[in-house]
Length: 410
Image (cartoon, rainbow, N blue to C red; front, side):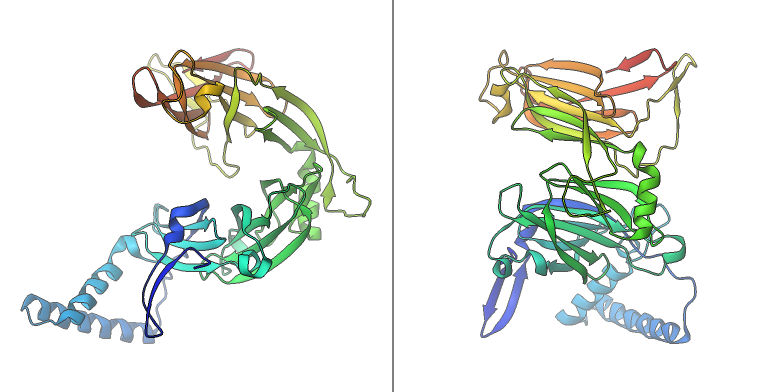
């Protein structure tokens, strides 16, 4: 099928279906479940009482071995529904969520973290290959609206961005979906390309998260396009920086934002960028393989760490910290294609505002694939050790004790 699903159709009816699109997930985000309501209506009480009596009758028949196949299936379904971890409401610790995944076919599915079941699935209309005459590419998914406070009654929503074709200058397409139902709330074909999407920590009065879409001409476009969002953005624009990684050119660049756009059309939501710094890695010895940064909405609960000798080490907490890993050219391909003497991995910690390299460490005999997570003041990355013939993980922690002395632990 167009959405990468398998169906068995017999005599015009669907016998079974299978979501094979889950094998081609390209991006994922999370969504909070609704808060459990305290008040219950009389109709709900009567309905729950009936279901309770019905459940006890079925369980009694099951224990006496008198239940048929349909009743046994109903008993199992009731047990699954009554399970605490499978509820469709938020739990006290916040572990119960929806995983909203985006597949290569442009299909969005919501999975429950309790048992992994598919809550809903939606082939995004604006990204359908049959409608647009091509296969969607450069697909990404982000949180668009996370309701709090005054908009608590509204459902959260996600943003899906893609395009048709491989050319960087092709205009992009975006769609906004309801996280609870999968309903498409809005869609738009953009008049500019999208090569990078930057989620910001800023929100407007309707709790919509602000995003910057960077096009192929290095212009940044603000979304949502509303006066409220523009006022919030302009107030914080001088403190915003971002970086881009060009794997083909083997270079990483840092940018700031300018008030005016270089386009001829007057668009107050378009901003030009200014290149502040760049780092060119030598292609004959290093190839960029991965870059990671902290989540913009990450919460830090502890600003310091107490060592064994009761010294206080203050964490280096910066949202502009970037982790970059490079591999030697022969180590950038499949495992076994390079000798231990020919393979190496170099890990960098870079300040995205100034381009300063805060730390650099080399792992000899290491090969990809490399995976990394950057959180708070530490980064953990995963690679393959050719000498020991095993996968390994390394951790780097960075502390700021006196604003002049850097303490590195790796």
